[in-house]
Image 1 (cartoon, one colour):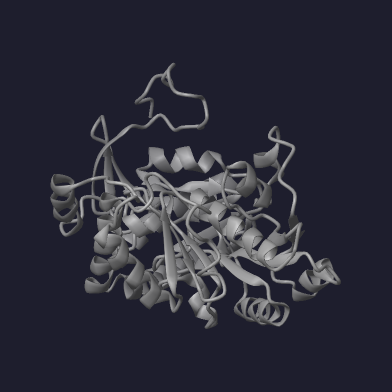
Image 2 (cartoon, one colour):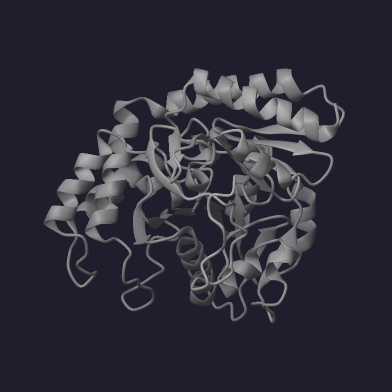
Length: 397
């Protein structure tokens, strides 16, 4: 698999890359510079919602590039209004701020929570966050993240975060008992980088109720699990709740960098002119990508597809791997699935690539499958046909 002999001497050594350089893609397939084909079960880390070279998306982006790529937020961008209106309609919330990445969206959510606290006379606002969470790599989002390995070497971290375990409402109540500085609870409906760890529906409902009772903001990070990946537009909708703040990114633009913070009535008017901003956020190209991505998802029934094909894929994984001694759990929903093994399995990323399958391993021992939402049942079967023998061999079964 030695396609690229060495890392470039001119780029920072920040990624443990595989020796692969991708040249083109079509649907859920990609080809490297040597012509080798891969089935893409990573989708740019849950970004390429519509796969590669989608026949409806590409002409729309070409049309937009020929018109205007970037202006700035000194001026109105008509597609900002269109995309904001659509996100409000889909979420049941009220207002949107556009940025360029999930990190930026989560940073804005943290700022919203702190300003919410200060506006209520709280000088040192605190936000509840979770074990194994991942919200980004800026100093503030890194501080909210629950991964010491990622945080190491970047202290002192930002204060004002209270960390609790997943799916334990009594632990949340105990950690915040008598604390008048708490302003928000910040969670991922399904943790992505933390190992594909879902929040239970009952727990999400309990947290929503607690936030209402205590006048906290419920902030749900849907950067990785949102935009139809679980079979609903946003993963928390399976619990029948609506958050106060919802960061989005990744799949919203099908590969064009985009981020958004959707806010409900409790948070929609916290930011005033001058409180927050962005250079690239909300640019005409990104907004067109977002508008077209949602339009195509609706036209092509991709939420239903994600639910149906995801259930098929999960069932096939359970049949092939569920009984193996070294397989701890198969979990997730729709096309966001994790296979947890009993030992670190990072080597499977390169072994899968050698066999024509692109996956990732997260949290050291969880195989993560987050393919494009256009995946078919036949594609899902192919994923399992390649992956299952590799896992069996790895576990010595």
